[in-house]
Figure (cartoon, rainbow, N blue to C red):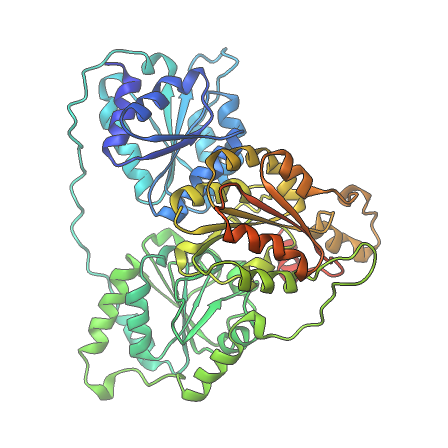
Length: 547
């Protein structure tokens, strides 16, 4: 049996059912081995799209995403998507064929490349193919993006037939987290707030129970949007996308506990969201994450769900007089959260419907889409000046319903990420929210979208510009010719790729979307929304402060 066959069979044996990629000579055999073992290959138009598909699939499914690319340029074409995955700690395994001869035109220093973007690196050896492949997969499953080097000469080498046994690592003995300082802080707090991040995505119920015990309000980073949907004390996203009410309440906290969140500049608005006199605690399974973005007063190492459970057990076992106060969960505050806790409840002056050409206010568009689209949805947001509107105004059913590709701040990843999410959850309508710049960067993947025939709505917030640069540099009088463009019929472009397409300048123009929703949804619907772009967004102002 060839090594490439062993690699494919081992991955299938670990439960791999989908692999995304573009096939060339270097990954031909290993990809076919995966398919022969039962996996489905999803071909992309470009390796960059394939990487984002694997990323979106992993984030939405909660399983390891598999990317297969050609050696050399196949890998470098995918590098931006791989970097986004690595910085987001997406569980993803990259099958990376490797030309090892330094004079080969395909040669890359794969260990150095992986290290440069924050990914892990493993290499398959002929005599240990099953062992090496299994180790790489398990590393990815623990929450890492992993490049698996597959030297060309090793792939073609003969090795012993794989026995079919999965070598599992011995489970690590449980470690009891040291939670007494956190218990004491919660007992002393009168206005606690929990901020849950990416590392808390699987800990909804333990955190809700603990918050109930100590009277805490609940918030999330953008990466964990949807985690506390349905809870009456949910403030939704903290930071740049926070509602005025959430900003006000978090600003009154006397204790902020970050659960699986590093409290980066987006989540804390460059440190301005959390009051200076508040006690800040951080819970994370990785001690290296403690204090990386701001000073914290106390830390607890451990899995979020485990730590929350341990704290709850300590508090529940105490006499009533020793438990935390009721906090600020008063009936009056509950009514305020119900009235003011969503962005659509915040008044605004509609800036659409006037001028030539006529445009639609992006807030009005987003609210109309929120009402029109089914509630069972997956919202995938690209990067750009527009990104706050879908993030703030489009509701999601749960934490798996929101995919936010912002760790590397690259535009152009959202469409392909949405395709991966759609493969992971075909039972839901996937909504890709893009800017016109990111749409044009990734439009080739509309071919893939049409081939997959999955339910997908692509909403392009089209201001005919790189809006972030327009609003950052324009007020200072800089020329903007390099970042503004003629109006383009993006709906016609979409139809050329085999999609349905509609141009929207007002709410009434969304009627074809309603008709599409009532039909078979067998081809993607692209909405070219000509939005008003008269002002910038505070979230992008904060982004530029971080450059």
